[in-house]
Length: 202
Image 1 (tube, rainbow, N blue to C red):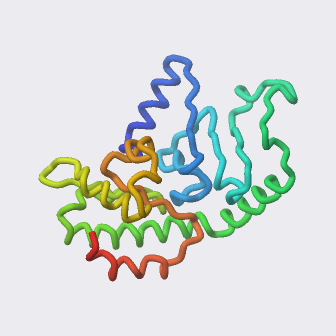
Image 2 (cartoon, rainbow, N blue to C red):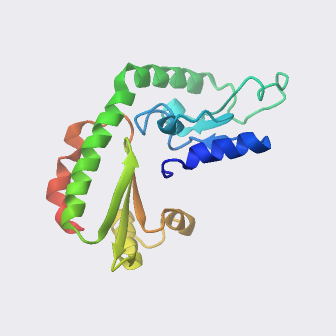
C-alpha cells in the first residue's frame, strides 16, 4: 500500500503533464481492501482501472474501466481472448451483487480485527518490524537489528510452500521482507481465532 499523499501527488503530476493515470486493481480491487477499489481510500479517480481475478470470483475475466474520454475507440477495436464469455460475465454480475450486499463492509471490519490481532502479536515478536494494510490486504514486514530479515523470510516461504523453489524469485523480490496477507472479502472473525495459538511459531 502506498504512503498517504503518494497517489494524490501522482494524480497531480499526471494532470500537470497530460499523463493518463492507470490503476492496476487486479489484486487490490473488488472489495478486498474494504472499498470496491483500493484507490478510493485516498480519494483518487484514475483515468483507467484494470480489474481481473476477483471481478468474476476466479472465472476467466478481465476488464478495463475508464472515463468516457478515454474509451472512445469503435466497437471491436479492442478484443480479448476471454472477451464476451457469458458464464464469466454472469459470475461478475453476481460477484458485484454480493460485494455491494455487505461483503465490502465485512472486509473493512475483518481487516481492522486482523490488523489489531497481528499488531498484538508483533508487540511480542521482535522479528515483526511492522504490520500495515487496508481491509484484508495486509503486509507483515520482518526485520532483525534494523535490517531486512532475509533468512527468516526464506524460512517462512519454505514453511508456507513446503519447498524452496515453488515460489518464483520475482514473487519473493516483489514482497521484499514483507509477507503479504490477502484474503477475500467474505472472511469471518472465526477465521482469525487460530492466530493466538499459532503465533508462537514466528
